[in-house]
Image 1 (cartoon, rainbow, N blue to C red):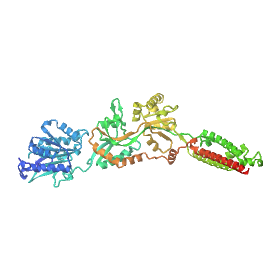
Image 2: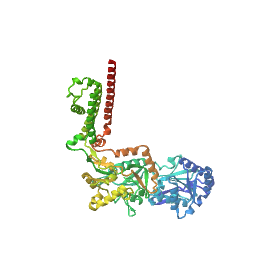
Image 3: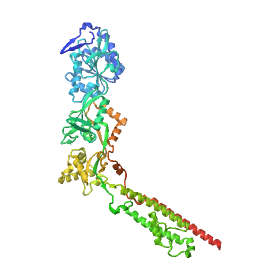
Image 4: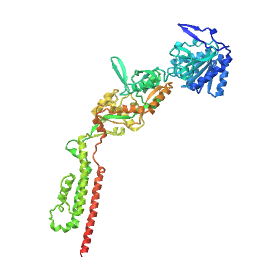
Length: 628
């Protein structure tokens, strides 16, 4: 028996075999070492760590020698006899794919029976409904078991889709490797052994394959444009798919779900994007599809996610500014005015008492008329009130105690007047806005307010199935509103927004912040902390063979900070500049805690004045003792 390379050519529909007399014949056994050496060389170059061996009766002689070499190298290998899988070849290939994907390395020993396995694998991807990827992720070495075996008698090179096939066989006086090239549709002799020469069709990524990607129109994420029948797309999904197709080397086209739904479980059946993935009509979904436990049981989500969303509400801003002449009262809370009035009266009394009991004024009492400024409480009060408004100069103490106390009064008045003036200016020039509620729990208790939701979205499903009391109450109220006002369950988002614009209406949705930031006005406000963030991620059919490469791409984007930059660009504030000022400036009336420093300074001044008064009395007393 001799080993030869069964060279066959095609001309039209006829097959021609090369004359065997031109081929070098040698005893089969003399070629075993060289064949085994080539297999070992290829395995090392390709870094194969596991092998699948499929054989038939024509390859048994070489198989035993190969088995001994594998055992010596401790290379894990699984052996399958074609006869044991007669009529179940597809099941064998599916089992191999499940266990060894994405690193499938198969060596075939024998004749037409093992070649039949190769032919079935060549057709399997087209029949497996996107569950296998032998074309791209499998590597095949065929070692003919006799000189009657011709590859082309089983495989038509014009129909080969397997990208990585090599044949080890005899030619002339040697044993060599012939590899299949997609460009020429021929098997060519390999001169030097490298990854690129042994299997030249695997350029990188998915090797230029075409994928069907489904998506759903959503603001900023996926935009559809119809220019006289010419459909084009833009947005986050388009940018992402362009980057992924370049990195993983594939082409793609977009489709949309016929029912225009995202993917909801209705009466036991899924619709929209999820249904397309479950039916394996598409290769992947690149859409604003939120990851939920129910969806995760029927499709595979790839993490890290594109970004996260939060369930919240959109509502119209409320102007909380005081109108009319009461504007001047806005800078302080009412209790602050009471305290300031009491402080002014108290300061006058303290000032009057300290000056009255001061020994200096006692000595000069005969020179001062009863109506002088220090003896008149009414004049003193007017002087202190003038200080509060940074006007008036009626306080002219003669003693050190009075001067220190006057300094404290002026310091207190300057701080109060400056705080009042600054806050008054801000309140008159900037609109003060107050949220009518700060949580869903507060909203459901408001009288005169209504809220609604799109009934065919994940938001509605979350409210229906929620266990939280506030979410259950929000949904029950929506059903109650719906009896007299069907608009609260409108399927048109713009109708909800129109109602929000009119006031006292909230639209519950995912990602309300994106809606707010993408507006060209400052009309709306949002609450975004209703529910923990939800991941928006790329989805694949279950057990998709594309998962490893796409997972690698997503981690590449995540590690490089690209996903973060894309998310920042998505949530860039596009509103007018005055909206930014309004959001960042929180106007509020001043509380006592806000100006307690001024009162502390005044108290310190009073205490210091008392200590000086004590010193003046002490000095006066010592002076009298010395005089006697």
